[in-house]
Every structure is written in structure tokens, then in C-alpha cells.
Image (cartoon, rainbow, N blue to C red; front, side, top):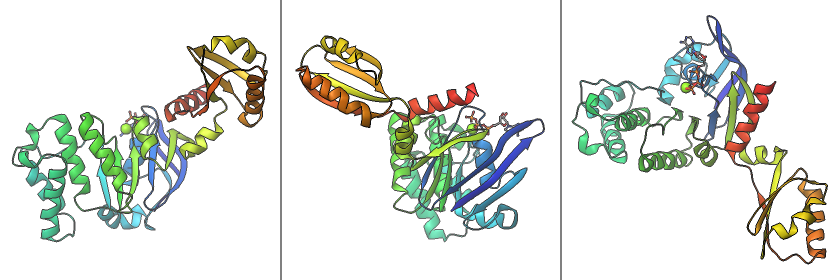
Length: 307
Ligand SMILES: Nc1ncnc2c1ncn2[C@@H]1O[C@H](COP(=O)(O)OP(=O)(O)OP(=O)(O)O)[C@@H](O)[C@H]1O
Ligand SMILES: [Mg+2]
């Protein structure tokens, strides 16, 4: 649905995005992650036809922004980083105005304005001037604007930033529900738990692409795997025994729990289990602990900075 080949964007002295390539499938949620200034918003702006690239190729629904910008704009919904609305007209009139650019029938338009204002809990305030809305209310209004024409592709630049927990939860549920509608979602976020829960794949970028993978691919590539052993008695009793096992890189204990860092579970775990059983240790649980996206992300960024 979205194909990017060797895309580069230079701003005078700065190269914001350098030679990035990826392919996003229909109905995929693609988490786009990276530190401040990594080039995420710049990429969204190129993909949504707001700015042109310095070099490289963009294809959206088999069309290119250079020759079919109008078509692309009609099938995408965009939530920008700092969305602007007409502050001196009502929220309803803002949506009415923006939706008038799309070729959707008046009935669908009216229904959708109502649907999204209700969904985001703004219906009671629909006649208030947009300028009088709070930050989070403006964000929800901007999201409604991005959705009003039921786009096939959604570009969301930090959609839950500034939202209260309940609204953020609702927006996340909404993004998840877009799978059923076969909407493709390009999701920029600094909330790594959100990215981890929603994304089919994540792309970690810092001007160049660091990694594109599913969460489970990232977890299985992680060099430092962890297991947790829960004993029926104090874990400290077994530390000495565990320290004798060369395959264990690190051991930490807390009450009746020991957390071990290992590299190759398929080799280490049978050795650890045998040693514990032979010594008569009272093991209640032996669990794999998967790294979180946050831990993996921080490691990848650190490795990149060390290069
Ligand atoms: N219009 C512009 N003119 C000059 N430099 C720009 C322009 N837009 C972006 N940049 C630069 O490009 C780089 C990437 O910026 P971008 O906004 O894409 O980052 P980002 O990944 O969205 O960061 P954040 O997480 O802070 O939103 C930054 O160094 C920024 O200063
Ligand atoms: Mg940004």
C-alpha cells in the first residue's frame, strides 16, 4: 500500500531523512519510532504530499505523489504534529468545511461529523469555537478531521500526545479497530507501550533506518535473554549453585525470585534445570521473560550512538 525506496530529504544543511526504504501492506499498523529530530515527521510530510523529497521514490496505492497528488490526498487521513483549525468558527463548522473537500455525499458527511464528534465526546461542545477548545479537545477534533472521509491510509503523528488516559485508551482502541476496516495505519509515537501493543511491525529510525521488524523478531534477536526462577524458599540459597554455571551471564535475586541473563536458552536452560533438580532445589516456576519494546529500543539506539 505504501512503498518507499531510497528516500532522502535534505533541508539546506541538514539531512533529515537518508536513504530509507520500506514497504507497508494494506491493513498493516506500522509503528514509526525514533528520537526527537530522527526524521519521523519529515517522512510523514513527504508521504502525505505536503513536501517533496530530495531523492528517492514514494508509491502510495500504486500511484506517485508527483503525478497523482490529488488522488493520494483523497485516500489518506493525516493527523499532523501540531494540527491547526480555524479557531474563530465552531468545531462542527470546521469539520463541515474540511470534509467539503472530499467527494463524499452530504448524508455521509453529516453522519460522519456526528459519528466522530460523538466518539470523541465533543458532540455537546460542537457549537463552541474551536479556539476555545482545550489542548486535548483540539487533538480529538483534529483526529476527527483526519477520519471524516474514511481514508484507506491514516498517517498519525503522535495521536495520543496530550490526551487524558481515557481518551488515549479510546484512540488506541480505535486504531486497533481499523484493522477490520482494512485501513493502513502509519503511526508515529514516543509511547513505546502503545507502539508495542498496536503495531504489526515497527521501524526504528534515526535519520537512517536502524531496524524494521515485528516485536517477536526483535525479542528473539535480543542477545540478552532472561529467565526468572521462582523458588518456594529464599532464592539466595541457590545463588552459589547458579554462579557455578558458566552459561549464566548475570544473576539477580529478590526474595524467592532469581533473574538470570543468558545468551542461548536452548543450551543454558537444560543445564540450569538439571543442576537445580540434582541439588533438590524447590522450584515453583521457571519462566521466560521477554524484553519490552522499550528495552530493545533503548539498546538499539545506544548501539547506534556508539557507532
Ligand atoms: N522545514 C525544515 N527546515 C529545516 N530543517 C528541518 C525542517 N523540518 C525538519 N527539519 C529538521 O529535520 C530533522 C528531522 O525533523 P523531524 O521533525 O522530522 O523529526 P521527528 O523525528 O519528527 O522529531 P520529534 O520526535 O521531535 O517530533 C530535524 O533536525 C529538524 O530540525
Ligand atoms: Mg515529529
